[in-house]
Structure formats: C-alpha cells, structure tokens
Length: 197
Image (cartoon, rainbow, N blue to C red):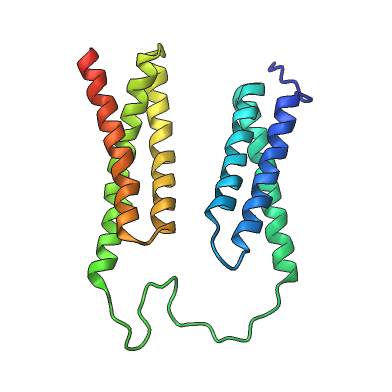
C-alpha cells in the first residue's frame, strides 16, 4: 500500500499554484495585447507548483498539481462557453488557415518551411536534448535505466514545448533561436560528456 500524506502542505501549496497559474494565464490571454511578463508569471507559477508537488510527494504530488490545474482550466472553459454569445460574423470556408482566401497568396514555400521547422527539425533538437538529459543524469549518478527513461520521457515533452514556442512566435529569427539555443547547449553537453569520459 502506498502511503501518501493527503494533507501535505507542499502538495496543497503546489495545487494552489497550479490553479492560480491557469487563472493567471487565462487573464493574460484575455488581454487586448500580448504581455510576456504576465505569461511568464503564469508559466512560472505552474512550474513552481509542479516543483512543490514533486518535492512533497514525488509523482503523486505532480499528479495532484496537474489535476488541480486541469480542473481549473475546465472550469474556465465552461464559464467562458456558458457566457459566450453567438457571433454574427459568417465563418470562413477554410479550416485553421490551411487554405488561402480568394486572391490571397499561397505562400507554399513559407508553409513548407514552417512544417520542416516544426516537425523534423524540432524533433531532432528534442532528441538531442533528450540524449543530453540522459548523459547529464548518468553523469550525476543515475543508473543507465533511469537515464534511458528520462531521455524517453523528456524527448516528447521537449518536442511539445518547442512546437508550442515555434507556433507562438511566427517570426523566423525567433524560430531559429528557439531551435538553435537548445540544440547548441545539448550538443555542448554531449561533447563535454564524451570529452570527460
């Protein structure tokens, strides 16, 4: 039987941080202009909540914080859905900006480059970062199996974060920076690991 202290203070504070993070992000996304400070505060609060939950009870604490954040997001969406009025504007025939409107340029090259950046390149950077995570974990004393699991878990998570950042920043310079910085850091970490070994 697993003994998890349900009233653990760290888990409770972490859960409050998770719910507060979702509310903070909801308010930030509802502003007329994008605010990096408010978005960063919301994401930082979520990371702090996850850290507190993990410190309080490991994976169980992370699950408690995640459930609280998810439930808060569900309540926010339900509230927004109930208050939303039907729109008067006629919906476009295209779906998710896949097809251009009449006389709009096709931008095939730009669309193809976006696909290449988001799918294969971001996946390769995430794979490199996963290998660097494994090397770092093993170097810090984790077992080979633990390092492998960390790499297998971290790679899709990092890929999802990279894809989110690439879709958030449509400017090509920022997209290349989003891919280039973690790729260089991961390659450097792997190189140092090989050099020390």
